[in-house]
Image (cartoon, rainbow, N blue to C red; front, side, top):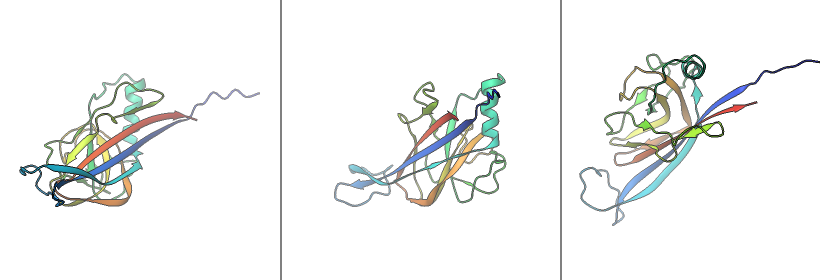
Length: 187
């Protein structure tokens, strides 16, 4: 009789993104919410979601922080990505198949603020989504998580990146709210 005590773990990250636009009460769309004195109504323009590729650097970071007593990065940040497909070997310094896009007025990448400690193998920022104040017309292809908040920066650790099923358009005045759900499952 064989005693197989192997446990397979699955790591999954799911992104949920909502795009809101601002409208004046007279029904015209506002493209200048930062210097507009009129009252606004927010309207959901679109929502989407996708599963993230956890890159090798992200998986190594999880193992080091859990089992190797490496110093843990307390803060994580969400970025927006342009066209191109993420690859398992990507890092923040080297991800030649895709680019970061920065069509937002935030001075840094928004912080991923978790709800609290992990529960049932999951954690999320559903109570405090990463928010992007869009200030340019652009096409968003997906998102990523990194340990560095520098907008457009190439340092820090890349946890993972992923794409929508189809790209999404944003224009100045939109707000993108990004929820990132992390989970580990045993099989």
